Image (cartoon, rainbow, N blue to C red; front, side, top):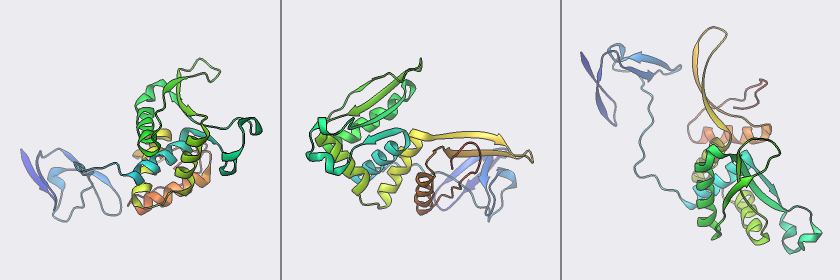
Amino acid sequence: DEKSVSNRISKIIASINHKFLSGKSRNAWTRADQLKMDSALRFVPLLDNFKESVSYQKGYICGSTLGDGTMRFEKEWQKLAHRAVKQRYWRIAVHSSQNEFLERVKRYIHNLTGYNLSIMAFDCGTDSDMIQIATRKTELLFKIYEIINESKEDIEFKRGWLSGMFDAEGNYSKYKTKNSMKVNALRIAQVNVSVLKKGIIYAKDLGFKFVLENTRHVGT
């Protein structure tokens, strides 16, 4: 047997035992034949008109740098000789399985600054297969510094920031609570709680509710 399920945006035909995520105060998976006319369906729309705006790309660079990157540069260093400041650099280093992530960072850096960076192997001192994207060029460091610290935090920037942070430090997991309730969770793990609090604010502005978890796994 089949049932027609629709909302104000779209309509689909599904088997009666197909489950939909629904709920007003609490979400749950509900069979199609158990849905009511006033059931609130949860869904993620397909964005066929998604554009990677300049502000989105700036947010992505900022979020990914805060997530998995290191930025060792101050604005006043711009006019100082390299020998006057030890170790000025920007770098994002991840496992080699995250090459797609660094390719996106590489593309955005080029779009925003005109610089072409390479993805290279990174020696982290262990047997882990790591890769990195990095620069020590003062001019580029200054541009990245401005992106991270002086960008306008509009809604596009916030979307990009959360995307970059999630690609760097996010994960999806399933687990059971103490009451044996099955839970699907999106998490961002970070030791810097102030970064997580900023993420919670940005997510709220975009219609998502994240909470700070006080567990041994620091994160939202």
